[in-house]
Each structure stands twice: as structure tokens, then as C-alpha cells.
Image 1 (cartoon, rainbow, N blue to C red):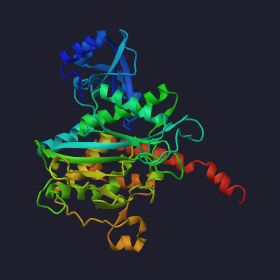
Image 2: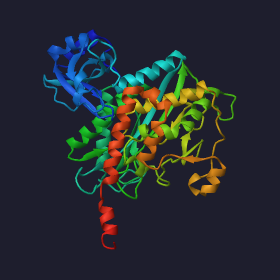
Image 3: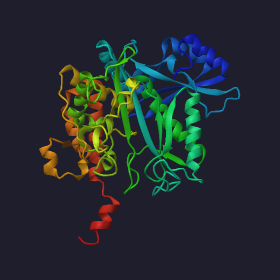
Image 4: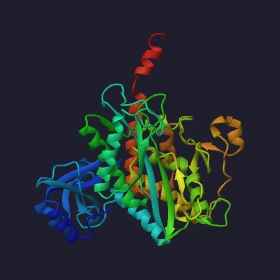
Length: 445
């Protein structure tokens, strides 16, 4: 993903591309991309010592009395932004690690939370790879009732589909920044689309996912339309998910693969998947973090709400793509409840920690459920031991608040800030009187 690997590489690349401004990027606790720009003349100092700023106004960051933090650019993330002018005044970006003034990592930095979990995996000999499928919608505007650009369906190619050109331009922009795309296509709902990124180590992928979301929006805005990663913007249509394919490698070998197992899954893979299932309810508020996320996580609409795993069954929470001979490295688990509006650093961190917990404690993987769970009665699901994901953000937060797996993954600082923010969001939502209520009840009560 990197165009420059070291300080010298970055300085040379900035000169070669006639870069004038460098945007220093980082994420707040909710996953919103934050940025401030420096000129190329300040780049060397920034690479050496970082750039200080006031973190007290960043969601989930510091309190007023401890507000000074340092943004230290990661040289491996240098990339020129292809949608910005480059006639001698090009713009590049670098992701930053946030440090305390004394140089120690800042506990409120989501990138640091993921780095801690990746070190935990590395200490056990594992590298964590992920490949998310981020779905999104194009609308004519962000105002009023969403109005799509097409009426296409899954994999449709329509002659007048303006979004085909938008997707193409987005893929080309990502490619220029060193982000490889595997697939791009129309999704199930009208005006819904998907661009799948080629799998990467989790830190590089979290950076890539943040870049992807901005790129989709920038290219859309350039063409006078609006790209949105809102999980469920349209009633009666499929919502947008971020199905996350994941695996652990030991060196060049996929630790999830076993040629002699009937599912081609190793004991490590089975315990990891069992960890995802066991802790799914408690990590749900992190991977599906908005009130609107739970409008997507309802039965039907291909949304996974039942805690189970399968190979072919897309109503299950975890799907294991079928093994193809010679493709041992592709053995992976697909976790299907995350949505693309989450904070990818925190989402990858909690998924990894849930899986590692399963490995550490030797969780047993239950039998797969290949029947359509949506067609089962509640008693049949209970008999099979199939539980459901939380039905609302409030229920999800209640589960998360009790979770040591999430607390460890996020760290005490982010954990408490995240919980507090989500409780405020829920309170504002539950006290709001909606148009639905007025239309439904005002005429009859």
C-alpha cells in the first residue's frame, strides 16, 4: 500500500510528485476521519518528531486539562491523493499514530488499540489478515428522502447506469494510492454498490478502509451525487454490510487450513470461529455501532442476526467459503454482521480478540447450521441453541458494557468513552418523536 517506506523515501516521493500539502490523517473513537494539513517544508520535522495539536475537541480523545497530543506520521502510508490538483501543488496523505507529549502511545488512539491486539497475535506467532466487503449507496443528494441513481439489482449491468463509471473512477483512484481492488459490482438493492479490497494485514486494511470510504464520497461529490455508508438508508431494501473475511497466518502458512478436516478447518480456525460466535453479542456494538445499524440487523434482507456458522448458508453469522483445491491460503471465516459505518480499527481489534480468546481457551465449535434459519420457529432455534444478535443499540451496549473481551481490545480509555457516547446516542434516539409515530398515532389517540 505504501509508496514510501522510510523518511527518505517519503521526502523523495513528495518531491517527485511535486507535493505541496500533506494531510495528516487519524480517526476519532467513532471512526470519523480527522485531518490537518502541513506544507511540504514542514514534512521532515513532522516525520522526525510529529506535529502537536489540541485533542480536547476530538471525540473520545483528551480532557481539557490533558489536551496536548502529538500526531506522528507513519511513512509507510504516504500516498498522493488523485482527486486533488497536482500542477505543482499536489496533496498527499499519511496516517498518524497519536502520542503523548512524552512520546508514549496515546490510549485514546483507535489505531493504537488495533496495534496492541496485533502484537498480542504476533506474540503467539500469528499475523491477522482481513478482507472486508464494504457496501454503500449512491443517492442524488444527502437531503430529504433518499433518491437513488438506478433500479438495478445484484450484479446488474444497465446501459445507462451512471454508477458504473463512478465505481470505475473510484477503483482507479484507489489503485493510484496502492490499494488493490478484487471486485466491484452492483449490489442487491437499487443504487447499492460494492467494491471489495484485496486482503491485507489488519492495520493496513483499516487504513485502506478509511481511505476507501473517503474516496467513494470524493468521487461521488465530484459528479454531483452523494455516496453513503449508512447501514440502512432505505426502508424495505437491503442494508449495507461490511462482511469481513479473516484468517490467521503463521509465516506463509494459513493457520486456518487443515487438509484432513471435513471442512478443511484447523483446530485453530475452529476455536477462533467459536470465539467469534461466543462473543458476537458483546462485540456487536463495536462492529455495528449506530442506532441505524439495528434497522439492518433484522430477519430477512440477507442480514445475519442468528449466532451460528455454515458453509453455504448466508443466514448464518459466520460463513466459511468453500475450499478450492490449491487455494489453501484462501481458507477463511466471513463474519457477516459488521457494517461499513463502523470504526475499522476497533472492529478488527474486537473481532481478533474474540477469536484469540477462543483459541486460548480451546472453545469447541458447534455443528454448522445449513438450513435457512429465517424459516425456523423460535422454539426450533432454541432447541438448536441458536441465539440472536442484539435487537437494538441499547441491548448491544448493555452486552458490551459487561465484556472483558471488548475492554481488553479497546483499552480502558476508549472502552469508557465509546460506551458513554453510545448511551448518549441511544438516549437522544429513544426520546425523539419520529414522523412515523406522528403519522401512526396522532390521528387515533
